[in-house]
Image 1 (tube, rainbow over the protein chains, first blue to last red):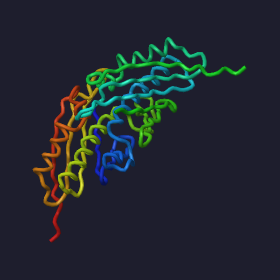
Image 2: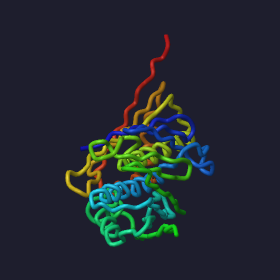
Image 3: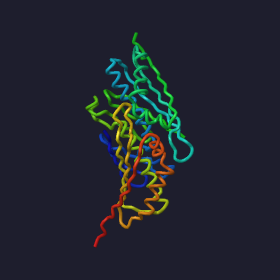
Length: 143
Length: 143
């Protein structure tokens, strides 16, 4: 199984990246000659990482009947100083919010994604040092 | 230097990925429980690869005074069969279109991106076998 995408030059540093399911406007920052009218390519790697593991979590929560009010996955990536600049250290933070969160199951779910299912995690492990953190925010229960 | 992004759960397998410069709607295909209302995370890796090298090319064309009518960078990625599924083979194709294209300089520019500047290429080299191809399409010159 595979994927095909195409990225087409518009003008300057602006591109239209054509994926299955939608297009993404890419542009460089003004500091490097762009106009900031889109996202920068490297960030898409972090978005891929967060989205891949987040989809595993959503899917496993459904299968394991775990409910939350909401969750997000944030990623911080630090680049090397020298060209070619790549993400050398990456921190992935899972934030779950809800009432009476089943923390044991949620920990298990996150670990299943990291260790078994998430292909983007597997790719990142080949070049980055990755740390992960899981936070639970208990929603206030009304009196 | 680094980047921070956040991906927030909406419903089902749908997420809003929040990057500097814009948001991206992520969703899984219907075959795996999504509604196809966005792009899938893994494809973003290919978009990152094409966008990174395409921006190098745009920047170097300007510096080296090479003109083209247009260009695009397409990427085909083949996934492994087993979990965690990652891109094992990747093909990157550069297509340049214009009149009297300076093929020697364009070849040099692409190689400078691949070998020296493109950080996403450097990351992909750690897990994928990458092949590249450069095509030149000479625009018809009016009679």
